[in-house]
Length: 160
Image (cartoon, rainbow, N blue to C red):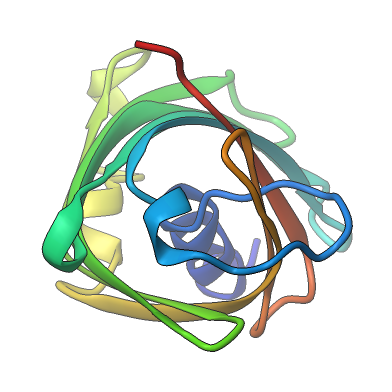
């Protein structure tokens, strides 16, 4: 199983929220606020599946924080559930969303006894820089296409 190839995708999935729609005028003020993001991916060779439910708050001055749940299905293993939190910085450069995460923490809540075998905190780097093309940014939706993986990630603004 080649986890090293999938881990950047997992990290990007957690760190880069997004949505699919037509390009609207990219207005940085539309980023500010709380977003709910969901995404699923499968690594074709290993059939490893990842499902992410994630909330992120994009704050002014390029700061963000998030938390969520990551479900990981690896053939031959029980489904693993991780809680994830992170703190990041973000900025829009034209139609590019650039994220830099430096405080990412995973907690295995379903099978902590497997942490010696599979611990994200030991595997992932201390900081991660990612970028994606903003396909849509409105008052209610955000859609970004990963520059590294070509996948589209989607989020909806939370009310309140």
